[in-house]
Amino acid sequence: MDDRLLYILVVFAMAIGWLLRGDQRLKRSEILGPNYYDAVNHLLNEDSDRAVAAFIEELKVNPDTLETHLALGGLMRRQGEFEKAVIVHENILANSRLEREVILNVQLELARDYLLAGLLDRAEQLSVKLSGEKGQVLEQSRKIMLEVYETEKEWEQAIAVGQQLAHGDNTEKYEKAISHYYCEIACASMEIKNFDTARYAISEAVGHYANNARATLVHGKIDLAEGKYQEAISILTRIRDQETVYVPESLKSLSLAYSKAGLPMDGLCQYLESCLEIIPSISIALALATLKRDQMGDEAMAKYIADYLKRNPTIRGLTQLIDLHIDNTRGIAKQNLTILRSFAEALVADKPAYQCQACGFQLKRMAWRCPSCKDWSTVKPIFGLEGE
Image 1 (tube, rainbow, N blue to C red):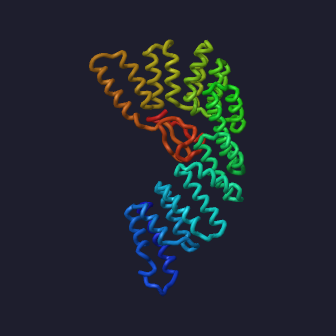
Image 2 (spheres, helix red, strand yellow):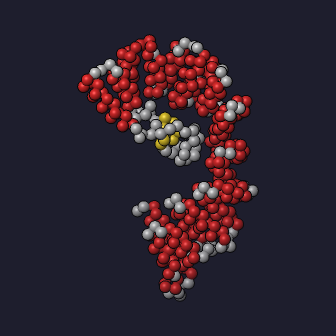
Image 3 (spheres, one colour):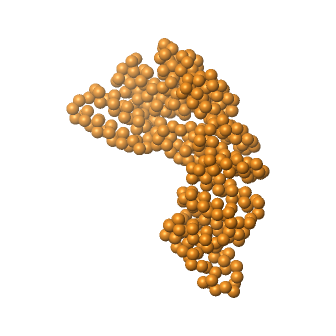
């Protein structure tokens, strides 16, 4: 049974239970009016506009029908009908004489509806109002406020709310988030070449989460932008000891820093070899092979990649190996290698390269915040045949 039908049956059962308890002397036709039957029929036929209108008209809000209305609001939200959920929850608040605690909880539901519907101003206004309460209402309202500020990229406000939420078991989670808010400020400051503000923001980011590989990566880019190449190298190589899985994200900046500093690439090669001892990564292996190409030549480079692929097979590595051989072949052999390469590319063309470790959501590009569960520092590269 799918979720939609299950919810419809729950709503139907609760409503009938209330109505039949109301007055056993009434006939069924008097208890269940035509609008109620229409409402159920519209839900079963997935006509949510008419279903919501019919339920609201037929079932007046009171303590006995509250669960029915809340279930309907939950159903609308679950199905992505956020504006309908808003209508249901606004109707509860407009037509009820309920206890204060119930009203506050319905207002929280309404604030979530506003947020999901993209009505950010309303979500912020209502959650700010609820943040004047105590207990769970205060905590939940702050979480809604935080998501509003994250969505609007209002990082200063997000930092303030995040600090209010960073207590008890949630301390680490929100300290990580605050660290990323400062990284966002640093990146925005770099775009307008305000490097002093960017450096201050990165210092704060590290203060809240010392092992934030993103903060290290942004710090290195700031040094690069200001021509401090050796400092950039020193900073960027810290990522290996923080979270080695993010080393591939630093390869372009690290290679540029070595080149700009005029340093021999042997040091970079040694660093990449040490990274491969910690974690197998085709991005690191290919970068290392490319650096050694002048020393080894194409044939030796191809052998190096082939030996790596025997231990850690990946399709990305296979395409690189095919490229090296295509240049040295002719005729039918070259045609066959070209076909093989096109097949290999097709296998990974639409495959995700990253996955959230918290919720499993997969992405093609790196994101420091999961688009699904909204957690920070949980998205990491996928390893295996179709990944790193």
